[in-house]
Amino acid sequence: MKRHLNTLFVTLEGSYLRKDGAAVEIRHEGETKLRVPLHNLEGIACFGWDIGASAALLAACAEAGVALSFHTPHGKFLAATRGFTSGNIHLRREQYRRADDEPSSVAIAANMLAAKLANSRQVIMRAARDHGGKSPERAAALGQAADLIAVRIGLLGRATTLDSLRGIEGDAASIYFAAFPHLLVNHDPAVGISGRSRRPPLDPVNALLSFLYTLLMHDCRGALESCGLDPQCGFLHRDRPGRPSLALDLMEEFRAFLADRVALTLINRQQITSSDFHTGESGAVLLKEDSRKQVLVAWQERKQDEISHPFLDERVTVGMLPHLQARLLARHLRGDLDAYPAFLAK
Amino acid sequence: MYPEDQLIPISALQHWLYCPRQCALIHVERVWVENRFTAEGRVMHARAHDGPDESRQGVRITRGLPVRSLRLGLSGECDVVEFHAGGRILPVEYKRGKPKAHRADEVQLCAQALCLEEMRGATISGGCLYYGERRRRTEIAFDEELRELAATTAAAVHGCFADGITPSAEYEARRCDACSLLDLCQPRSLRFRRGAAAWFNQRLRTSLSEEP
Ligand code: SF4
Image (tube, rainbow over all chains, first blue to last red; front, side, top):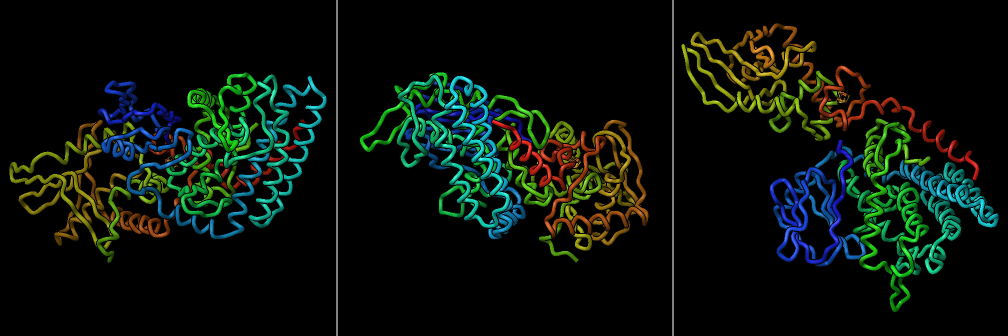
């Protein structure tokens, strides 16, 4: 198995990445900025319109299984490079067969969503424990949201179609995001959220979440690729050209535990304030260039945290979770596991 | 008779006898991690394969000889084959480490011989395993039992390749701790294999029972 290795994020416009022996070298305006051995990396993610890479590096990344991806400065996924499709054709065929079979898809998607909801409920209860004492109103709102979400988790287990799963999930998501303002404490009052908006984000919290979800998606996609699954063929998210549906499926169980918690920490410690955002003419809110770097640092730090993996019962870093879950999913598809044990945070 | 495009590598037999799951992970799923042991083995093989052919005292020594058997559906390379003046053919396989309890090395050598027999219409009565740690040869007789084992193993591996199903395996310290695929295979977690559904539901119930 790959060790938990870091993803290298390149945000400096005008950078050029080249192969230097067994390392990637980042050059900028004729100077070497950084050199990192490829075997220390699991991915290289470039954020910028003017970042290039040499063919020799692309080949070396494909060979070493390092996912090299390009994103807009705001983190939107543009393209990724890889070598000839490797991996197990039998595994992929089984993935397609199950995706074509609604009961099989429901079984997998229901666990992913149950974990998603349970993990967002954990975030809510954690906030209720930590900050509920100061405000009875907040404690009541959070407690109620936790109960409502618990009911939705129960419903998931009885759903027999993907559409009903999606309905329950959408319902739970609105409960969760309605409670989200109560998760913000000691924050810059100008940093707020009203419901979830994505295309485009209409407030700072949504802008921050969207950015973090992009990072998470990159990790999930790379994890699926690296264990031979097709990231485009999902169980919950159906096929749409260009959409990494399985990566979106896999993300569900990590959204609250990884991305939302990083966002809350940054906001509640005022490491991110309203000055980190700018609002466009249309009302779309975006994170500023420099602030993105700060978020990337926080994201990387979060991925270094160690936890005990609930199913494997082994110490792992948080950054390794998408890889481990992708592998467990492959196991289930291969018949080694009788269900997909989605990630349930403690 | 197997068509040429369905020949499987002789090395797969050895992997199968060590652990069927390992064989499927390497050859069917095509995951491969090199560790110290396999790296050393490779270096040693490179040495055995690379040398020039030589002749001395009526023995011609060939290295890296490609062989195949359509009957067993196998193809591979012999490290060293000695062709003796009297017509005796003697395959020699170089191994890191020492002789092992299971018969994987013997089967591999015998499978090479079966290929050679088929290609040359010859009979090969035995071969040698050279173990790096002992620095000496062990003679292996290709008796009926060993030939049979090589043939049934080849058939089993062909079956596995055909269904494309990776056998599951339980963790076994002696075998798994020395396995280069340990990290990928995670055999310990397979103890949950039948119980992932039960585990998930139990864990979900525990999570839900936590009060805000
Ligand atoms: S770790 Fe054990 S079960 Fe897994 S492939 Fe290796 S020997 Fe087989």
